[in-house]
Amino acid sequence: MKKIVLLTLISVFLASASFAGIVINIGQYIGKKPYPDCPGLGLCKITVSANYPTEGMVNGNLGVNNESSNLTIGIPEAEILKSQPDKIVFFKNKTSVFFEEGFTMPTEINTATKAYKAIVIKAGEYPLTYKNGIYYIETPF
Image (cartoon, rainbow, N blue to C red; front, top):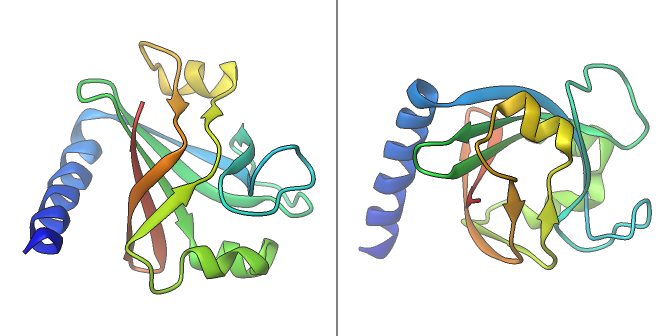
């Protein structure tokens, strides 16, 4: 029952985020700090619109809903397999992810998303959904 409620809430959030938020393309290195040595799960580095080949960078998107202070990170499975295949174990057949360390978004992300406050992802467990080849991580900020 908990899973049904959680999935319903995630679906509602995804639907509302598409109408009430800003989405930008990002490039990210998945793993714990310190960059570039990033074992484990988390975000080591994130940049705006990395639509160019960068060694090890996973392209995706970031959606910010300022009204609800929620963040959605979309990461295509194909991008993980292409750029950081060792990290797929954190996503495949999972319903949540655990970020071992917190992550503060760089100023360029806050500016691009027009976030009204600094975007900070705290260490902890967050819902993970998979739809149409993309993993979605939901976090408050």
